[in-house]
Length: 400
Image (cartoon, rainbow, N blue to C red; front, side):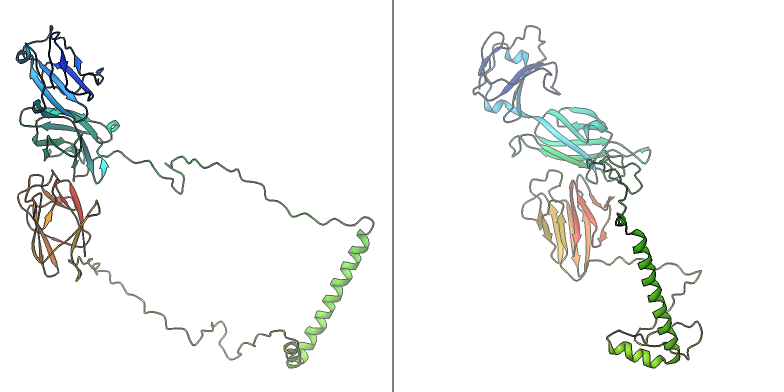
């Protein structure tokens, strides 16, 4: 893929979109107004360039960079495949418990140079860097926690020239409590700080009163008199029944039963006044729990792994069954738990020792550390069901 300068032709070797530009040092980004072009042949004006400036060629399809100093290409430069020795854009996400961190200073260094950027809430935890040498990439995050400056967090990642993703992306997880970019608020019962709803607001309606029956024309007085006569007759009949019931209660009960009217049994007369009747088939009430003033609350037991098989389940859904004895976790192939391709995990990162129903985690001197529920592992720690264990940027949960 040839390139010639100072009026000579630049042959990129293909119609792959690319940008060729001058930089006074190692580039930190693409020129603001530069647009990728697909023409194989072009010219680059280096008349105003200094000998120590760089000529940079960025291939959009591979996101790789070829560069040389202007003094090395005075007679032209033929860009070949082997000249692409650096990686272009690298994305970083800075998060805490899965949420983007609001503010931090982030430094990224390769074997030659370092670049620093400021993270603010508008970026939502995402930063982009440009132009790095393949190999170990060290990321250092300066942040505040609980109103004070925390100890900087440094993690290492492996940057490859040949990779599956055109733009590599790494995640740095901060275990300390930090301010994060808040999610949209949800409605609350009392309406305070509630999110706006798209549902239409329906105004309350006045309850509909039942329509009153209309009196027929010319018959209102007659209907009223008839209604009063019927009520009077019913009342007198009820009075006669009441008097008869007092005189002969058994006869009235038998007649009501004979026509199918249910009659409630008479209450017992030998009970104490005011005593409630308790059915015989109810269980006795539980004994009252007596709390002593000086009694301390019973501690919540933390039971190690149950009799089931201990398993680590990653946030991605992958699960790893732990065998009896030592289970080494790392980036190397052939380990008990091999996380090949996880650049934040060391080759032999940590060991999980299973002894009976107990699981212990031990850090093996990893670069990015091992954490249990946000606490860095500096000595052997016994795990319990539900504990969250993080190896570098890979988070898992212990299940039984």
